[in-house]
Image 1 (tube, rainbow, N blue to C red):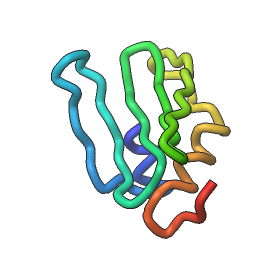
Image 2 (image 1 turned 60 degrees about the vertical axis):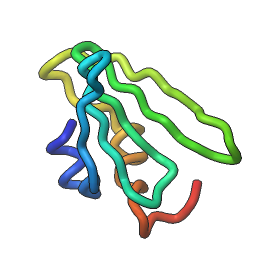
Image 3 (image 1 turned 90 degrees about the horizontal axis):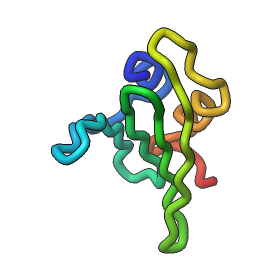
Amino acid sequence: MINAADALNAPQSITVNPYDGGISLHWIGCDFEIAIYDDHYESYRFSNGETAIRHWPHAPGDPVEAVLLEQIGGAGPTASPS
């Protein structure tokens, strides 16, 4: 996932959640974030004070879903708002 994100639109920040060990990818100035876990991804879209969370099942070695890659490609400070 991190390699895919770098290839599409590199996140400006990568952090590890100390509570659950998830790895978070952040794009500065953007309303989008991804958390990576052992068996799934979570995407977060922030808009008008609300947070839309989507769960993406994933097994190691499986390809990342195209829809999620499209969202990553649209992330970043120069991306158009969604």
